[in-house]
Image (tube, rainbow, N blue to C red; front, side):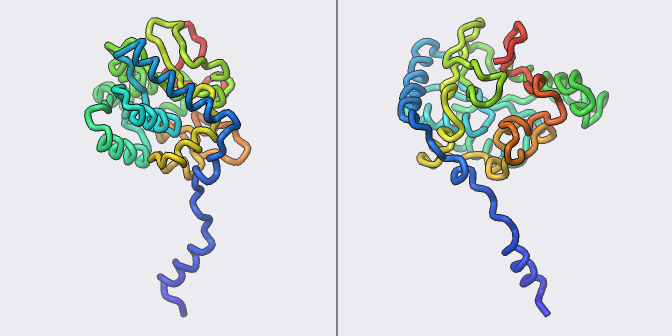
Length: 258
């Protein structure tokens, strides 16, 4: 009769190996080298145009690439992360490692705790599932208000938006000056394969949730893994209509999604 340890080892033989995002996705496009040069030039130009420019990082694949590029180019561009109080453990683990690496060059902004407590007490822990209005209210407390503090005093910011991410982002420009605060999107032209090629070749640390079929990662209650054939952002607010799938961070003042 087998011991429990032997049974466990036998069971593990039939468990699927964890998906390795680099192995699955690291497939550069034919123009990858040109896009990399374009991105490097844009990051340099952003600092020239706006010495106070700052990077907004969700610690997703795109953002860790941008952070690595900034550091490899020796650019004194700081970064910030919004710790919403509802992030996955894997995201928090990467945040801790990134803080160790960047030190004072990385700022972490959190929601006003009293506002979170009052909202949860009034609407419940699962308020985001009850209505679009409540979900956006939650995003407002956990993301939008901290974002305003993070961007205060900065004339420009850098994001990981890509045109390939969704139909709503298909027109994302490399540089957006349509609002008072300029926005740079240095990976706008990159493919998912380009992103992972950079991560693989540069050995960039990334969120382990990407190995579990999470291409787009937000708060834990509002993010799930996607299945083969699903849209890139299908795991974000999956209970809502496609047109609603933005938290507000990249929605223009006039209502057009960026």
